[in-house]
Amino acid sequence: MQNSIDAMILAAGRGTRLQPLTDTVPKALVEVQGLPMLEHVALRLAEAGASRLIVNTHYLGDQVKTYLNQRDFFGLEGFISDEENQLLDTGGGLLKAAPLFRKEAPFFLHNVDVLCDADLAAMYSAASASGGLATLAVMARETSRYLLFDEIGLCGHGNEEKGTEHLARTPVGATERLGFCGIHVISPRIFDLIEEEGVFSIIPLYMRLASAGEQILPWRIDSATWIDIGTPEKLEVARKQRISS
Image: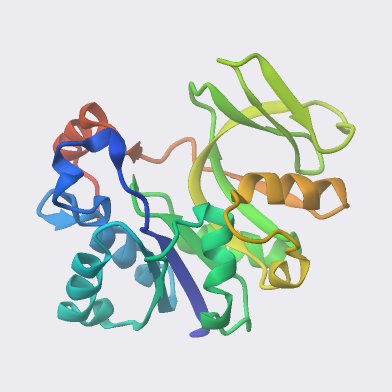
């Protein structure tokens, strides 16, 4: 595995659904099985070959920075992308951190609240070989908000609760609704394609780029253990679930 793999952990969110726990502890430092979520994710990324770690911070960001410095960024070359003045969402956060990426190879982008034992090294290899702009970890699971893929890649997204579905382009062949798992492998070419500014989500960015002909590909992790710890109920499940770091 090459040693120029960058990884960014999205760790700036407030974790409001986990209140009152997150009134004093940032979501990134919520412990599961004896380790903060931030460390679980970082160790998984390092295992997959990442050598540079970028972490964005906002809510209770000083606690996250202190922990990272105390743990020496888990042995990786480490950088903070500080969003203290404004929480920028997933797309805006990535754009702000752009100067911290080496842009020599595809990079990981990983939500801090996702506990998952999928083979990230295999995902990275598949993404690198595909030639696509981005590869997204997805699974067939119940979700009100889904991504729509056809034979080419991402072609739309929808929200069952709102009864809405938006297509980026006309689907080619059969389509499938899949749940996004908060893990991406992205080509550094994306930084040349971002026109959005300020606060924005990465999914509308992907939709715009898919409509322009870029390939956003699925990578199935149906057999993996995957838990989003964003609610107290799911956090409790994660704390009881045996999953390797």
